[in-house]
Image 1 (cartoon, one colour):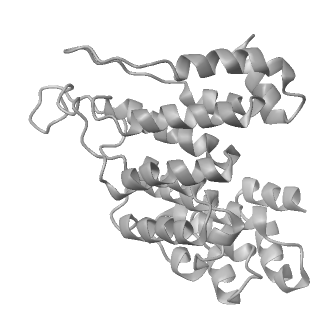
Image 2: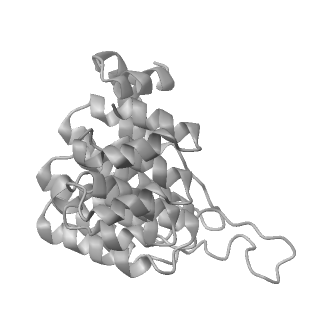
Amino acid sequence: GNIYAALAIIVTGTDPAPAVPAAQKMLDTATAPRTHLPGHTEFTGGWQETATLTRALQPADRARFGDAMTAVVTDTDEPEWNRQQALAALATVGRHLSDPDRERLFPAALQAACGDLDNSTDDDTLPSGQLDRSRIIIGDPTLRFEGLLAAAALANTPDQYESVIDLAYEIMPQASPHQANRIAQALALLPVAGRALLDPRSLAGHESEWIRSLAAALWSTADGQPPRVGHRLAADPSGNVRRSLASHLPDKSQHEDLRTKLRHDVRRSVRTALKTAD
């Protein structure tokens, strides 16, 4: 069947049965044995869509997909782009795996987040140096941020939550805007018990608007304490941060002053987010 129609079925939460044929076909393609030919580099994509489609299949099928993606992640003969795509696919399927499967696949994702799996054999295939006549850069030069995303999605125990959070704080200071966005996405993927370990106060002071946007969501779900953090976020120069606050702010009397401020925000998207949250 049509892949995009099948994806729409999964995303909307309707009966997944019509999506099964397309999901099975994509799964079989993604899990087929991979070969490497000397002097030949093959870039692959579409694994995140496959990860979404496996929600129409059985737990064993999702586990098979997870194993295939982990094999790509740990294979240094795979181009770095493919390994990043495999980690992104693990992040997509992670929360839909059984607890034993998450436990089994978590170590490889954590290795990537630690930087232990960096360096692929294709690293020098494309010109990317400062002195090259032309530069071709595909994806991030490290697997750490995609690895953190996958590890967060697979984390399922307090110790694993702590490992993900510790790594996030370790790589946060040197992160580029894009990388900070990935860190924020990763921490948002943690289950409620994991997000409860984060401190909105420290995140609210970060230079990245994406980290501060995460802080706004966390502060809103943490009983709005301390209050001064909420006021700081409501006055944040980034519309993304204020929109995140408006989207997550509970409709409680204690937040009425913040809600009044956000109702008159200069950004329409912030005002709309507050109305939608209502």
